[in-house]
Amino acid sequence: MKRFFDIIVSFFSLLFFAPILLVVSVIVKLTSAGPVFYRQIRVCKNNKDFKIFKFRTMRVDSDKLGLLTVSGSDERITKVGYYLRKYKLDELPQLINVFIGNMSLVGPRPEVRKYVDLYSPKQMKVFNVKPGITDLASIEFRNENEILSKVDNPNQYYIDVILPKKIEINLKYIENRTIWKDISVIINTFKVILK
Image 1 (cartoon, rainbow, N blue to C red):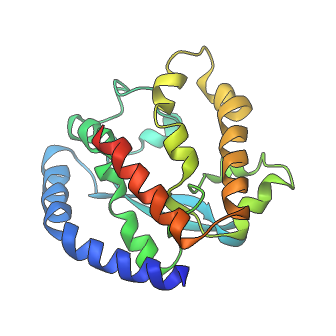
Image 2 (cartoon, rainbow, N blue to C red):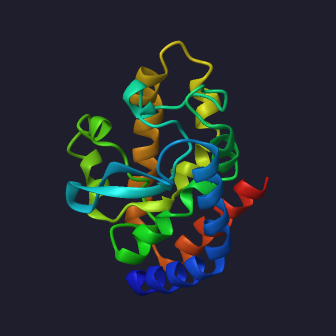
Image 3 (cartoon, rainbow, N blue to C red):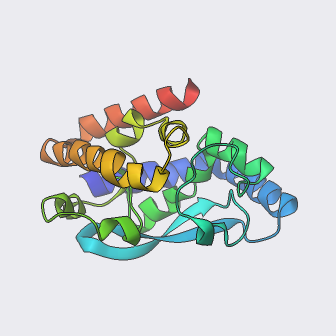
């Protein structure tokens, strides 16, 4: 049922957002050097690697300088990228990941291997389900960049404080997930973006 829901919603969402996807693609290409999409390797169900689709919001090879962005003023972020991130438009291409089946609309946000290698055996249970475009942890930590910008060591704070809390929220979601709960998460995500 969940897969059927993902296919139907992602298909019609891609059709609905096609004009926006096209316009953003052109703007990204015209305003900074590099590809339209950023294809980062993340970890999905069963602890397997996959490539996530996102609109590129940073200069090419910026991820080599660090995986975390701690504020909107990060010099690696392009001018257009700032607004794409602010309104979550950079995440729209992940509907492609949902449609082809390596992501779901709702599920634990896919993490990079660097941080997954730090998970405990209990935390690894988040890989019993497909990762999602949105989840309860994303709503809870919607101001993550702002939090990280206020600490001395953002990377360590993410590992020690934020990541464990996100995983805990996602493990609780996995235990009680339903289509109706997923719909609620999607609605609340839109509410957060619109605010």
